[in-house]
Image (tube, rainbow, N blue to C red):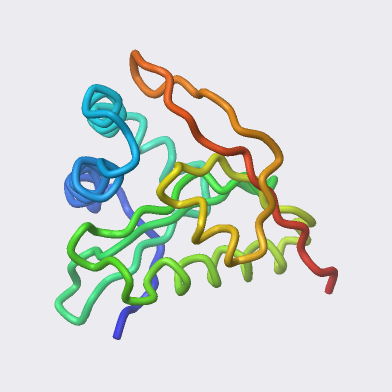
Length: 158
């Protein structure tokens, strides 16, 4: 059983650890080590976390103990900024639960399309949700550029 709540700045240490751990463990199967290390380093900027929590609809999934098992965020214009699931909680329905909350937010705020930049690892999950690949691209993480996919999903009108 997982609960969804709005993220707070008190969550930042746990979010940073989850982000780094997931990239170094889960995404490592799809990217070279130097790219993984570079990408994981992007989560160290505490001010950036504060900005994201402040500016986006930023939610976390927690287990019964209150531990954060995943997080996601979306902008008021429908840009899905993040979706990360703790390395120890993969394949338990948490990403789907988070995404359903994100899509409900988008529907409530009359957002017509959700757009995201999705890793090689996450692409199959997003395709299952009905996202289409708009283009393959190389995006800069910290110092290196990594392959990802610009994907989008048209939402049904109310």
